[in-house]
View 1: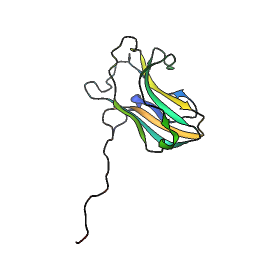
View 2: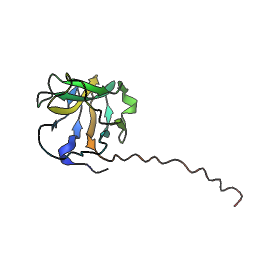
View 3: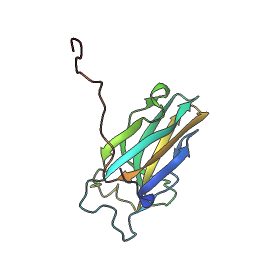
View 4: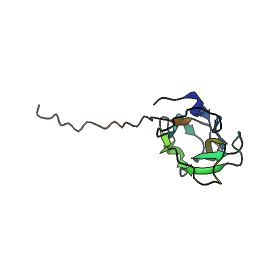
Length: 146
């Protein structure tokens, strides 16, 4: 996975209460953000969460750079604390096409909706072309009798 700094929405952003990503993507700036490629959202827990109850991740758009009065495009369900371990990834989807006029806005970002107050936890998130998606499985080779 190649991470483009201009498409990085959160860089080891600590989450203790509900918040939005520290960075946004301004869709009015003329630049190539992967035109013609399948863009994907990635949210990776880089520091395990502790203290809160659950966390929900949402891909949002807003007319405002601070992502206030945002429209939610897609969200995860509330993810329980026990699942918010370092290295876990969430909202692993292709960037959805925004087709409803009411949802089209200048800025895109992420919202983090916390239940409870976390004493630890951080995420790195953004939009990438090729997300790391390989899975390692235990060997199924039976070596008994060799």
